[in-house]
Image (cartoon, one colour):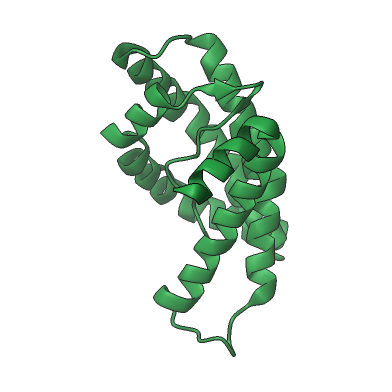
Length: 168
């Protein structure tokens, strides 16, 4: 509990910095979990560069884009009722998510060294599944509640995305 309170104090004092560090940390941790628990690479085979890429992507793209979007979303649909949360979720998933994934996936491909042709082919192959998975996760009641209960604080969002996509 003390750690959570310290995090909340840091978030109140430095919302933008904490949001950027949180997104980068979560994406880096997600990649570590993916490599160690899902792919079972072991420490010797761990791809540190891949983890650092994910941290950089979280800090430099995901946090600023999602933080800005949640500010816009909160201005477009002020309020914290269940109906407001549903409206936010529909706008988020119907309008923002397809655009975000359309930018995120090619950026990931570029950072992974794909050529423009390979990146386009990967986007065409992976985008429908990524968007469908996003809808399964992003339209769940938990995400709707997250848009209802977690307010935008001091010109930046304290809301965390419901999911973090780690594509290879």
